[in-house]
Image (cartoon, rainbow, N blue to C red):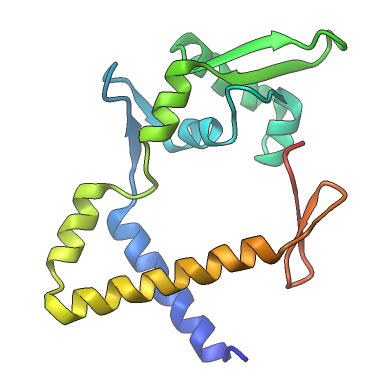
Length: 168
């Protein structure tokens, strides 16, 4: 059983690491364009093969369709997203990643590698090894948690009883 003290400690410590090392913008190394984290998050939710409707993506990201459309406009103009009408339902707009969008999605990280390096440099020897081992243990537990959650009617079930809608 996880104690409430352990949970509180995790919730206090994790944001300190995230805030010290997270990316504020995503830069396309090839074109030198800068995307907001919100735009990069949109790319994270898209695929080059399987389309998703603009409406479904907007609902999933909890924004209006018009807000999503404005963001997709820029991503499309910059060559990262393709938008086309669904062959079966012309009212529905399908989104896919372009080759450039796929490349950018693959190159991005949530955390800035240089900042992570600076953080790790502050830890020496055994402390660094223990910190990385602890992160490895947390990542392993996270992967197990994800693998153990069955999909139920388009929703991911969490052991807390909460649900989160899938994109499709």
